Image 1: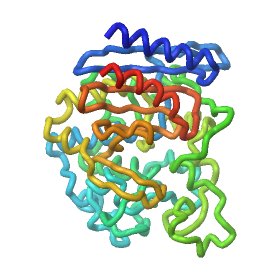
Image 2: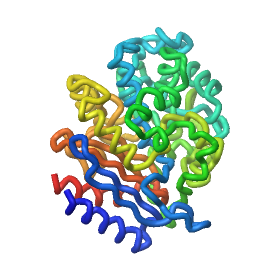
Image 3: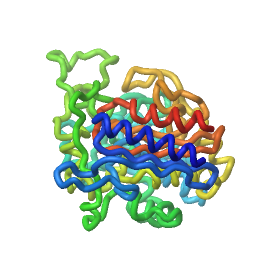
Length: 381
């Protein structure tokens, strides 16, 4: 595997040297062993602080895979079941016909409440009780379980509140105690980051020419003049109780991603992590450290597929993970999550390889860096 380390490092050096990225981390595990730990660039362009292997990065939806892992660990221990109705542990969630929505539906973006309340701000997202109350009172866009659509922010609160109700602890505590701590990455894998750790984080910057905004940002678009009569195939304009637009403050851009209140709050639709912590987590799923082989087979297999009700694009979800990663990385043996800023973490059940790619230039849906690195790793087997 020495050649793979050299090859990945060469790619990372070239990407950063070209100016395409400010700083990049890549970590690869293979069947329990770390085989790549490559890093290049600058973590904070204002100070010149170097990007190192232990620099945590705010990684937007890449964190959804971490949230799912916490749920799977609790399921493995019998604390919850995938087919348990969410309302059994969170009675308020039953409002407006959501009583039959299950943990499985939440993992597969099928609860029917993908939107944010109108006028939601970044500060609101930091208020756990406020967000959970709004989501519990949401009118579903579809009957839970009859369709699925990407739950950009609500995913984390729904599953996080289920975790809190069954354990009595915040999901950040459960992550630390049950996952990150036992795996030896407690200082590199967070939901709410301890304030004392903020100085270690990479500073996120927006790419000079961002790509089209992903699903997470789409709800912030300006609605059409006739929004009240907007067709059902324009769900980006929808929020919890109708057609409207959320303010730009909720867009996961650099300003949002560097906010101290965002970083120190539990918003488990995303997470802050290093590439090696992410790769270690997926390796532990593959290796049976966190879940049984039978549970691994279930969580990494297609659970729902078809047209996503929110994005309007074809999608395949396992239990908390996309099957395949991007359009260019669509192998059905891959499961993981990519984030809107261009980060990703995933595993390949065919080769036993787990990969984390973190970077601090938010490319807003451009996954070319991830795809280039992933090809090098996957071709090596």
